[in-house]
Picture 1 (tube, rainbow, N blue to C red):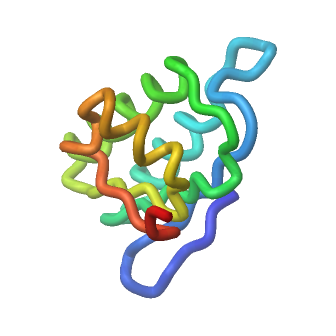
Picture 2: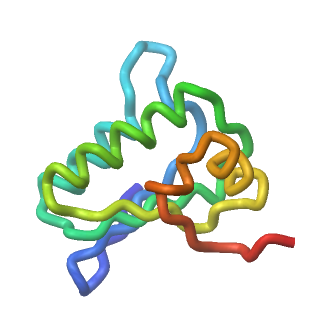
Picture 3: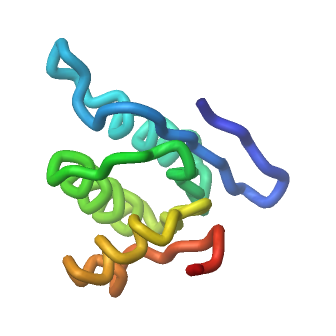
Length: 104
């Protein structure tokens, strides 16, 4: 789901798996569509992501690379403490900005 904002930003909400049962990557497709629509800032709402595996981490890295190549930015919003810790451990917190619930 996408929610456009007035300042050329868009919020993309993700729930579920990074790769669907049929092999498609709906998250990547939604993020690329937002980039192609000219949104300069993409806010990925990960508040409903209860489990993060290597596939989803890979999708996030690919999304980051795609946004940077197009001159846009990607920020994860509503990131849980658990997700922030995973990003810290994998050192992805150096490139993926997060905002949302403060660590407990």
